[in-house]
Image (cartoon, rainbow, N blue to C red; front, side):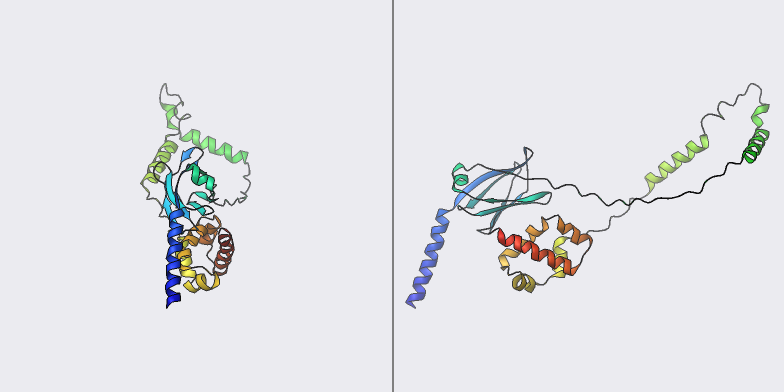
Length: 243
């Protein structure tokens, strides 16, 4: 009984000593000298987090050698090992790199059209019939400026097609699968705890870490259980190395 009591007292004393050494670290997250709002700032060592405000500023409790992670869906994640100098200066500036915009795949195809044969006799016949049917030649003082100029029929059909396209309803976009929904339907809780050896409090942070990887978008486009598990195993090794 005395041993248990001494162990409990030692544990609480250790926790209090750690909390007393923690310092409030303030900083700012930027991209090309522009501040970034809504960046997730995570102290992976202490399992605490916060977000940057409208001015890209943040404050979080840290100890020397703590591992800080910075996440934003449009940027590559950034990692920082806290030093005593960082805490002393208390003016940390973190630069994040914008992810390249992903372009859709374009498929080029070659279409061969049949060659049009030139029939001089048929063309001459058409011109003659057109001239015979043109009654404007009987109107005194009429010249064929209008008939040989703008094609009213073509212009009218073009305008009609333009208005028709404006009236058409936009196509409905196919709903995209969320990365977390894909993981929830693919992997069980035992997979994270037994296979990946992750603690329950580390799972959420690990999923954020995986979602920040551009390769996770490939899994959403082509869902596959084996590919998903291989991806999670690979990211788990990276995640463990950040400790």
